[in-house]
Image (cartoon, rainbow, N blue to C red; front, side, top):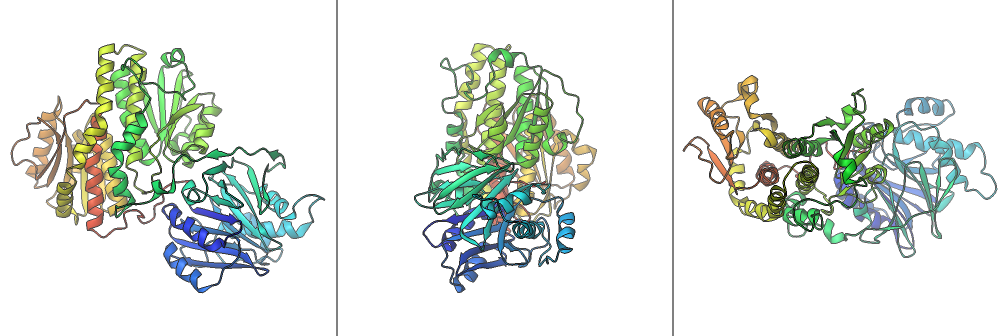
Length: 616
């Protein structure tokens, strides 16, 4: 969840590191720091707070070195203080280290080191690892031909229990960085006479699009002359250089005040990119080139299991509804964090899917590994080429929506809904969905971008609605069937960026407890599309209205809502039920965004949150 940047080259390291940290700040913004090797010293500057505070502090120092590391933190061990900010120095001053992850056995290591004279200035697990490296460095020299610096890091990591993405500087090797990863992303950018390490490609793409994705258990030894990869067992690894397909401009805000708003308005294009080239020539079904499963094998699947976290879990719930509705195959959805610790009975004919925008969500990655350990094939939906989940899954589907910087997911979520709907179609056509129904379904999916564009035109009106309810302390979101997960998603969006307490429920469950919250100060957002359950939804609205609860109704064209029942009405274009969840997500994204802005919240950097959850 923290942001890591490292640089080895000919340019001054500090400005490049700060630039990278600004691009990575969505991964953590409690504190930040840099360390540059220069003049026979490791110069460290670090501060609690945002990167802009660090930048002012760095400007006071003259950091001219051409090798350095930088970090922006999302606190795990220890509070948000200058002392707990990274980089951390070993007590002998010979090593500086930055770290993303959690070292679970740090307490035992700290006791061991303290008995041998090492001291500690912070509450973090990271400083313990830094001192352990110093311990091994001083314990014995490396064998002839080996780097003493590299070997001290390698030996130390063999004792670590937990997760890490690290970059280390050594006073005795001022032009070198040693980096390593285990369940925490790390990328090496290969430039023209320079190398950039980062935990996310957005930090390096303005300098190079050629990258090497480090795998779990790999170390990179980077020098001005080049780099070498090896494993914890000291086995050399031949690097594979990939190319990033998007540019730095894709990760900029452009004309928008926030990344979240930019990404909300990018959704029509993102949806088009997600389905481009993925329909059959006869227009009756979906095609996926990377599933690595034959149609015959898929037709024999008797049960689907979807695992994800947060917003992606909500996308799984919608996909569950569509697969069962159209393909008539049982589907189970589980939190990835729960699945790995439960002993769930698994039918041998179960096919697993995991969904993660970043492809690095640690609980989802662990669920993937657990399912594979039990002999199941696991497919993935993710947005990051080269990510851990993309590499370890047996097959999968890339979202192709470009970088998503806003912590609150928008375009990644709707593309997950789209791909879930396409999976439902593909499986249904292998069973009993007719050709004509398949064509109708495909045409509906193709219409989704234009339908979203229509809803986005209502942004000024939704902004006005948001202003009227921005000071609410509580809010309910209610829906049924495929729109119940949208109620969960709407509540999540509102609470994570505006800090308003919000809950999502199936509308029929409102009478079983949540109705106790209803008052004139607690608005309810209702998803009430025209259809067989519309009258039941109207009845639920009447019960809220009788208790003076304000109602924001999201309806589809043609829904005959009684006059005066809802305080606010947002009308969606009529559409196929497979597309409705995509279209219905837009109003609640805009509503949450504008409420947060009205309340003066930092939309792109909500408190206590980070974009990619890479620690348990």
